[in-house]
Length: 390
Image (cartoon, rainbow, N blue to C red; front, side):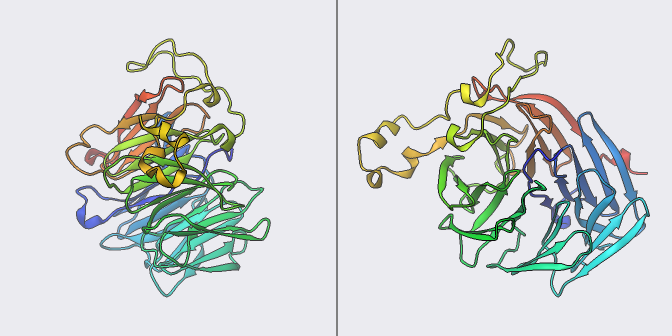
């Protein structure tokens, strides 16, 4: 079921990792995630957590392993010290046939790949190519500013085709709404972009800059800013963002090791389904009432936020006007060192979310949609352990 927004995969520098992990990324419905390693790739199911697939090769690593939901098709790009394939090629792998069935070659390194059932999107540093999935015919070419981290988001709803990417100026986002033949240009931030995310149908866009203190939510059709959310006061690298299936919540994860849950305004979301926290987990708040996002309090604000209604908007500092996160989860040990993570809401459309860390740790967490505050851990697993190697 195409129920959740796409989140970016995390590419890792093999020279700085003690493990063999080179890449980790969720599939389009966040029900599983793929890992690229120095010697192959693996796929893990999220709930229940288990390794469902493993492919090892004698020589060569994988820097990108992009899944297409749970089907047998993968997009692979070489990576690591000895890449399995050239880093300027995207190999379309059919695991039923145990071979590559397609190949896309470029003049420079591939930074990211995004897939839906209709499109294959390849991101280079200064250009993005959009292909038809069925025959790999080139449909569109998009020019961008320097994009070394491969920032790009593709909505997964089959009824829409929306891509968000860097514009031609620093801090600008370009949203291509191919289904209605419209381009929206958004001046999102003064600083360079660090993360972008689309919701399921491509109607909402979340952006963050390299400063990492603010997240902004936009309407992709009008370019109107809908909300401004504050992750924190200190600079950080925002590495992942994800919309809830009903657009009522937004996940934000940074290298400080904290995952923030923001409530999106009622006007910015459809009527939310019921969100039921687990009734029997060790760290959970018990007897939490069944609730929707519309029933819960708003995100916290500064104690001086009342000035916004008394003074002209131009005189009120942004810091006072911003909304802070409704719920938070801190990765154990993250206070000692910076972390690298990806996060996404769990696919069962509840108030649970998933976190995968570059140190080979998987978490499933929950939050109270009424009280907010500290999140609770529902599951914890280590993967890619040395004893797993055969």
